[in-house]
Image (cartoon, rainbow, N blue to C red; front, side, top):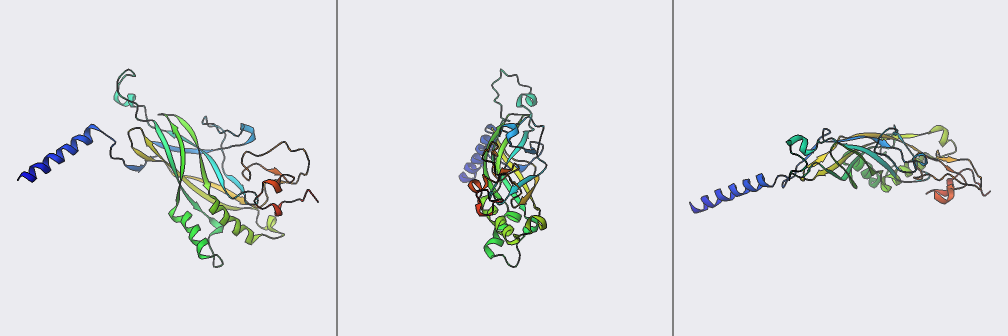
Length: 264
């Protein structure tokens, strides 16, 4: 009888604690109504290599030159859709109620549809497992940004990691030949990204899943210029903006494939 009374008191105490300290138990749920990924902002020389949360211009797709790089970074533009807590409760700014709808983004979930680069019979078991991991299981990467209620912000997310980029590079090299640029102008993949954030009261929220196509190529971002005067260096080598051929051997992951050979 005594043990039953003690257990009842413990249950009541737990209920009281949960009522007094909301958010001590977190829940993770997808809610585009709370956190919305809107688009990918360009990071180019035109905007000083700094994306803006004000919106406006955005990328409809990305370009990744595997001759130059094995990774792809994107500046995701997102919005905290939550209303200020004062709007919901009617409390005045002078009240003791803290604003709990500030949102801190902590990580990103990434899936990649590898398209034509799906594993084939000639691929090793390790490569096949790697491709299937990104395509079906997905990966998480650390990210860091924040937004106040009803505000926009941007965050840098690595959509293509070096290990996946190395797999794409190997697949592209298997297609490589004299007619590569004509036969395979581009291989398209699609990245699906969602953000995971936490509010001030420890409520965990997952955003919508944002899809972003990326064009993979080999040498498409190398301009056939051998001038000794180099003034334009991309913000992100191998993404969106081209490099001159004279610079290519110094920045490319595959310098022997840089064309034309400016030193010859």
